[in-house]
Image: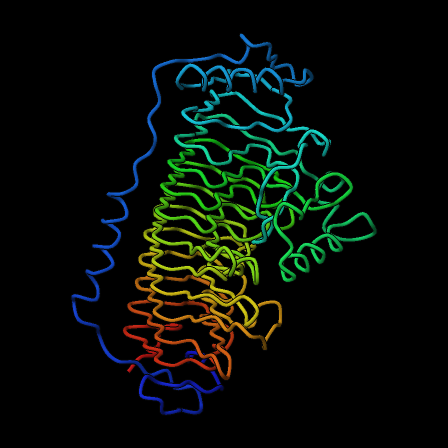
Length: 466
C-alpha cells in the first residue's frame, strides 16, 4: 500500500508552495542540533531537587482518624498536618485503611505519606470543599471550591507512598455538572470568562456554593519544591493533578486511573517552571499530560509560561492526547522534552498533540520529543492545530514553531499527521526525524505549514522524505 499523502498545500522553508501533497524536507540536521536538546535536559534535571523532610513521623490515627470508611477524618488530618508543620516539618502518615475526608490542605515542610493499603475517600458533598480558595479554573483565576488536596504559597511539600487518593466522582457526583439539565457548569464558565475579559479583579470572581465549577483532585498553587511519589489517584471531578505557577516539581511513579470522567486530565502543569514527570502510568478521560499557561485575557494578564519540563519513561493508555500542549496557551509553552514513553489504547486519540487558537495566543516552541513508541491510536498520531474549538479568527494568533519529533514509531493509527496552521498564522519549522508510521489508513492533513522537514520518515513502509 502506498503512503497516504495530503492533498493540501505545504509551504516549504523557502516560501515556495508545492501542491498535491509531496512532503519534502531538508536532510539530516547537523549533529549539534541533536545534542543541544540533551544539554538542555541535563540543565533542567540539575535544577530539579525533590524536597527532603525531617525524620519526624505523625500517625493520623493518633489525632483521631479512623480508617473504617465511615468516620469523617477531615479534622484529624488537618490537626496532624498543622502539628507537623508547627514543629518544623516531617511526615504525616496515613496507615492502611479507608479514611473519609473533605479538603486536605498541605503546609510547608510536610510530606503526606499514604502507606500501602491506605485510601483517602473524598467526600461527595461539595460543602466539604468550602470555604473557597484561590485557584485557576481551566486557565482563569478565581475563587472556587478547594481542590481535594490543596496548597497555596507553600514550600517543600509532598504526597508520597503506595496509597490511593480516591476522588469518588461519578455520574451523579461532580461529573453531572458538565452538561445536561441544570445545574451544570456552562453558565458559570461563561460568567468567569466574561469577568476575566472585563478585568474584574480576581478577588471578586467568587464561585463555590451555588455554582458549578468543579474542583481538581490535587492542586498546588504558587508552591516551590513539590513532590508526588508513588501514589495512585482516581476519579477526580476534573483535572487530577494540577500544579499552578509552581517551581521545582517532581512527579514520579504516580498512577492516574481516571478514564471515565469528563475533562479528567491526568497531569497538567500550568505556568510551572522546572518540572520532572517520570515513570508514571496514566489513563484518563481527557489528555494524559497537558502543559498549560492560562487562558485568553486572564492568561495574558498573568503571562507566565509553562517552561523547562522533562517527561520520561511514562506509559499512557486512554486519553485524548498522550503528551499535549494546550489548549490554554496564552502565557506560552516552551522547552518541553519528552523521552522514552510508551502509549497505546483503542481509546487513545492522539500521541503528541499541540492545540491552540487565535483567542489563546502565546508562543509554543522548542518542544522536543524522542523515542516514543505508540501501539494503537484512534485518530492522528501527531496533531498540531491552531483551530481548537473551531476558532479560526481572533486578535491573538499563537506562535507555534520549533517542534521536533524523532524516533517515534506507531504500529497502528488512522492518520500519521494532522497539521493545521491558519492562513495568516502558519505553523513553522516542524521537523520529524527517523519516524515510522504503520497501518495508516487515511491521508495526512497538512495545511499552512512553513518549513516542514521530514527526514527518514516512513508511512506504511514507504519513505516520505526526500
